[in-house]
Image (cartoon, rainbow, N blue to C red):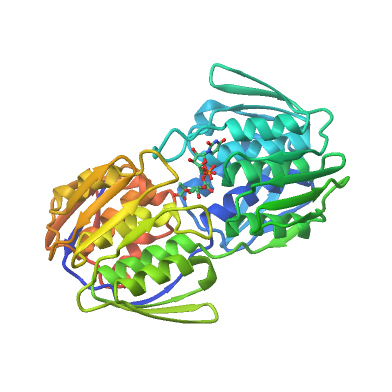
Length: 418
Ligand code: EPZ
């Protein structure tokens, strides 16, 4: 197993070109089998979740190759409609394959998905949505057996704006007969990206980014070359890291409007932030000020995927900050680790009360999930002394070359095999 040995206290200064969005690429990879023609997805991040989605596509019979940073997919020979447990459990987005496999093969056998251990993560909305599109679904032994011979459009209201369920329903509806309307759809930028990708293949989708999405079923889709959007969570993570270490950073390949909620909170902590075109500039405050309240909400509210990183920042901000995690039930596994580093945090159900201290101190900590692991790395760079972070594979699932990027910004990090 690999560990990171991080020697704090160093500033994070410099320039970062932000990776392409993990959470845009994963559903787009799933949607690539909606056509039997060649699909090219450009500038994909080489991260564990993308590699696992490629394994799933190959399991279905697709030919998938890297050409530099581009992924070339030829699904003309794909014939299997099953995702075995050993692959499905590797990541949450294996469940997104359900909609596209049904559209392509009209049947599917998919084991329950994996993904970060941050809550119950049910798939009831996926199942309800697909059933309303005339899919017969049986669950047994942790596997979904689906028959979708005659996919028909429907009006589907989601109890909550689930990102994955919205994406799954879109992929199952795009080749179905007739019109589908998704009400209370998720509005994340990654949904808009999926709409744009499928429309470029000849799909007829509108409304993504709003809570009502219209899909008109078409007969077939053609090949496409597409570059997905930048990763707003990776961008936010580097901004927060530089803010925590008293640094200054310039990000390129950003969609600023995707992280206005974070920019607002970083300004509240008295960082200086400017942005123009695809660039964001941050200069850290001399001493970070506490943030009154950070409440995670569906987009465009504050993203749950930046909660851990911002909680890390508040541990060394002057004053008391309140964080409320509304999306996932148990997304505070990083708190116990930060307390080991000297943070003063009280958690009551969904609320974390953070009393800022002058500095954290290095010690042994463990990453429990992707964003919590990133939060610990930021804390370690800002802390006095050496921090040893174990289970770093969690971080490698979603951040491309994060260790090298942090080192290029001034961090002292060694990756060791133990
Ligand atoms: C996507 O997960 C992202 N993952 C997550 O990012 C992100 O945190 C999440 O959306 C919310 O923005 C990918 O895109 C691969 P949801 P997803 O369905 O689709 C409830 C990261 O760190 N729900 O929007 O699984 C659920 O319990 C990852 O990059 C149901 O009740 O999230 C949760 O409370 C972590 N029934 C809420 O909806 C369902 O059928 C939001 O979940 C589905 C979801």
